[in-house]
Image (cartoon, rainbow, N blue to C red; front, side, top):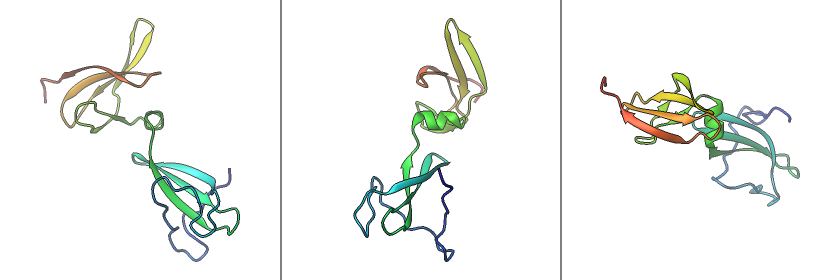
Length: 125
């Protein structure tokens, strides 16, 4: 996959597409994805039109697996961004152990499933 440029040839920012758009606004043909890059909790998708060769950027929310790949989890209670601080083996299930710094909820997430399965509020915060 070719590396996408974040600017056009003149140093201008790439035009942004509306969420969900995958067609060139000028030619009305399907755009080709050049690159995706995680930016916070959003995936920046860089497109190029195969007809007019105009490049665009479109953003979409990152999936839970994409967030997990970068160590980012969301608290099931307050939706704050959290990072695991340890791992725990409970029988055959491997889990990340997470303390939300925003609301104090302790929770565990199955590493393969990435779904919060239990939670309790920390008394220390």
